[in-house]
Length: 461
Image (cartoon, rainbow, N blue to C red; front, side, top):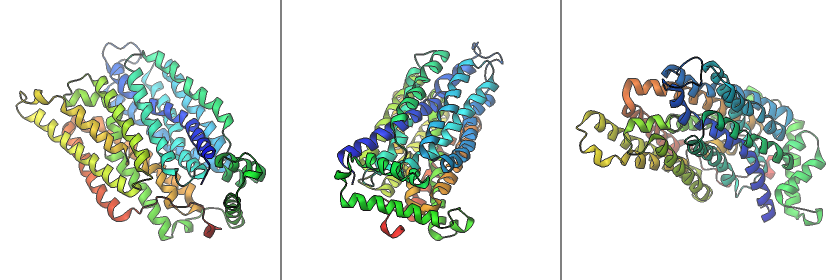
């Protein structure tokens, strides 16, 4: 177990790393306040004219194609250059998103900007779980893993708030401050001990290990900590001495196949429960379901509830365990969406005079649903995979899983506005609810509990 100082160092490194994720979350949420402005007949931002529904669906979804490409690119970079340098490289496409958004005069330039935002997002979801798995003590690994969802959700909320008060051009310039701060603070974050050992930098690996375990001098090293570092070093040497190239044969074991299936399935449920699409098009959704509040105000309230849910997961994830939280979260998400679908169907198809007395219901229902999503299904799929896969294929399997979520996210965001036009909001919400309920059954019978699993055990070396 890391000392109190070590825990602080792990939290510091995780917090610095997540600055770029906070800015990426804002990029994801950017569609909600600004797409309605771009689609307005009165807009004078783009020389190509008001954005159409079809173009809007591309603005919302092309980010996921960038993430698909980014997952491969950054999966390669992390093997080639290590985790820290790969994290630092995230700044380039992400900053380009805000700059191009500021300068854009056509919808095609916005397509490019959104693609670049997705490129950095693909890197985030590939590299961050590996970073957390490398540096964190197993007793707080779940909490640190939940930071990924917390900061992404905080970025959504940040954009909902500033998008309600700042102009289109001002927000793009303002958001450049976060990648700049990230670049400066990353200079004070050591690379992971595992990366240093893989690159043959043993002395640097030991200094990094001491930083993340809160050890200032060699005299403070206990025999248990020396054994932990020795196990890590032997494990890296063992894998380097073998054929370290990942082959198809490495994916044929039952553990590997089950881990990959669970990883991909959890990403499918994460996206096709519909919450990500609802958050992306939040203002439009609230305008359609009859909220008593303005669309942007409703989105801000929902974003705040999402933060509360993610903070709650910090308490529950290492207390109740991953599996229990996934079941509760997925079932609650499905139930909330089903109830909201019924309400919207009544609003559309029944006499509306009595509905006016319940105009508060959409914001309360959807906020509760987002809370339940945030306590488990929002974050656990992103850090549970390194706890499931054999260590040799952890990076490759993690990349495959993250590639799958970018594909699912693209499909979800691309078809969402079109589905709303074809089967109405209640039809879309009902479909998402059904998928969530099916997910509960699979999680119950297939997904194992991984709380407290030691990622590098003496038996591994």
